[in-house]
Image 1 (tube, rainbow, N blue to C red):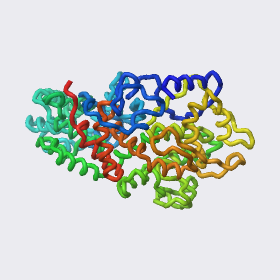
Image 2 (image 1 turned 60 degrees about the vertical axis):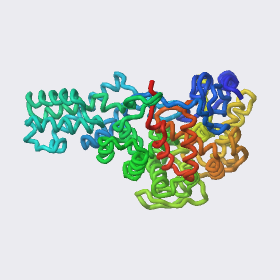
Image 3 (image 1 turned 180 degrees about the horizontal axis):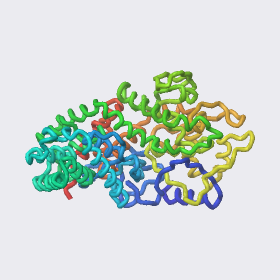
Length: 570
C-alpha cells in the first residue's frame, strides 16, 4: 500500500464510522507529511523516493551503505534536557532539590524521543523558568559552605587572587571548558560588584545566577574548530561533554575533564577507554534506562488514565511498576548479559507485595525482589505490566495501540496517527463479547482493514494480558483468543500464539536488531537519520551484531562512529 492510499484509507474511518483505539499515547506522522526518508529526502537505504507504508527506514530492505551519499550532519548547539539540567546543577552545586521538576516538558520528536536536539529551544516560558531556577539555586549555594567552590578559605574571598580562582574554577565546571580571558574578566567584575555591595556570599550568588543562565551552561556546543576538507572534528571539550551526557547524562567528571584539558581525548583508543569507563559508573544506569523508558513509552505511565472501577489497584502501583521496569532493564544491562534477546524474552522480574498480583506470584516484601516468573506470561520488558498499561485504554486492552507500538518502535515502520475527527472510543462490551470480537466487527470492512490489518493481528497476540498487564484466560465470560500474525516484515511474517511467541519472533529478527541500532542512533544523536547517515548506521548495526547483540556495546559503537565526533563543515 503506498502512502497516498494509506492516508485515504485512514481518512475513510471518519466517514464510515470505523473506530480505533490508539491508546493514551499514540504517535506517528501523517503518511504524506515530510519525514526522514519520505518524499524529497534520502532514506537510510540511500534512495530519495517516498517509501510505501510499512517499508520505512530500516524496514524490509536492509540498511545499505552507499559511499556516494555519505555525509556528516551539520554543526549545532543542543540544549540540556530537564534530567541533564538537574544532573548538571547537582554536580556543580551539590543540589538535590530537583529544580527542573516544574520546567516545561521536552517537546519530543516524530521518533518518540524527548531529547530532540532541534526541538529543545529556550522560548519565553523556558527562559523564565531557567531564570527562576537560577535565582533559587544561587541563593541556596550562597548560604551553604562557600569553600567547596574554591580551594581558598571563605575569609579570603575578598582577596583578588582568591576571587579569580573562584571564578575560574566555577566557570570551568559550569561551561565544561576553561573561561576565555574576556569571560574571566567579566565574571570576576560581577563577583566583585556583589562582594562590594554586601559580602563575598552575595558575590558568589550573583556569579552562580549569571552562569546558570548563560547559553554556555544551558547548551552543549558541537561546532568544532578548524575544518579539514568538508568536515570538522569536535574539540576535546565538546567531545568530553557529548560523551559524558551520552553515558551519564551529566557533565564530565574530573578524569574526563583532565583528558580534554590535555587534548588527548579524541584519539580512538582514549575515546573508547573513556566511554567504557563511564559505562561502568553508577551514573550510567539511570542514563541508559532513559533510552528504554522513552523507547517503551513509559514516559506516559504517571498520567496513564485508568478507570478505578475496573482497575482499582493500578494507582497505588504506578510508581512501583515503573521502578520494577527500570530495575529489570538495569539488571539486564549491568548484571545480566545485556543481550537484546534477554531484554525482550527474559523470564525474571522485580516484584514486591504490591506488584505480585500483576505477575501472578506471591510476595510479602515491601522491597522489589528478583523472581523468576511462572509460565513465561510476561516476557522481558515487552510484556511488563508497566508497558502493557500505557499501551492500553482506560477500561480495557488496546490491540491497535499495542500493534502500533511493535510496528513503530521495534520494527521501525511508519504508522500515521488517525485523522483528528475519528472517534477512537469503543462502546462498552455487550454481554458475551470480547474486545477482540468487538474490534474485529468494527474494523473488518474494506475501508478499514487496510489500516487495522497491519496493527490488530499483532496486538491480538497480547490479549492474554489485560489493561494493566495482568494475565487472564477469559474476558466477559469468553475464552481469550491470543492468536496473532505478523505481516509486512522482512523475516518474521507468519502466525503466532501469545506474547511469549511474539517476543521470541521479535528477538530473532534481523529487522528488529537493525531497528534497535537505528533507535539507539536516533536517541544518542538527538535527531532522525537521513540517507547520508546510512554508512554510519550500517557500521553501528554491524558492530552490534558482531557483539552478539550486546546493548551496551551498541552505545559504545555509536560513540566511536565518525558521526558522533565530527560534523560537516558548512
